[in-house]
Length: 300
Image (cartoon, rainbow, N blue to C red):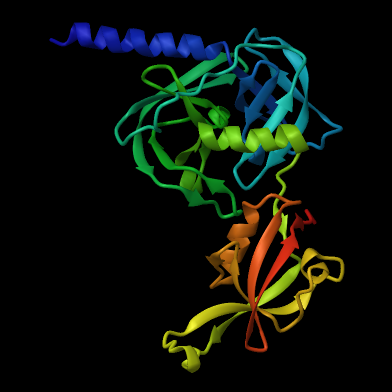
């Protein structure tokens, strides 16, 4: 008989669920319920996919004390599925783990809230992989799948490890697979949303096309390279202002090779607007280095 072990497990899960219930909230929006949690004492995080409001609209929030309050949108990033809501009612914020992320097989508790009160689901980490990019272009620090049964109202739940530390937010992925947006990704994106109300991304203002570059026989080069030929320029964009021309071939950005349009887009996505970047280009066969002050990518 393993009664003592089961009792210990039950008590541990109940303790984590009780602690988590002090931070979880329920939202009612457009006829459906979903969950969220206090990321800070006056700021709630939830899944951006579920939030369809503008900053001037209110959203109904059911707090840990089962009080109905109104929240306002601070900002959201659909690429990482994170939205921040500000409320006047304060509560305990979740506390993230300081160690490395969860490992395969780790037990987890997903804590949410329904209109009837706090809820939880218990499961395990079914996959713990490396960084990945969402279909909407969001950079997420770790690929974490959960082997867990989660009710629809629990999307946006806070996920805790066996020590009761916050490890991320539970969201539905393709085929209703439960994914975790890791706590460090949330922290990075949330800080940008709090500061700017949006995610700012670097902008060059140049449309490019990959082209093969013939090796330079005079310097003994033999391997073919790929560069990005500029096919058009934004008339008010940073590239034109920096002196780039149509037909120039971009070879590298800040020392990193730009061998595909996707590679360049990824570099710009993580670059800060307003910072200077160094471009290595080829113009009529001549190597040139230029500095460009990156702009902010237009949102529309």
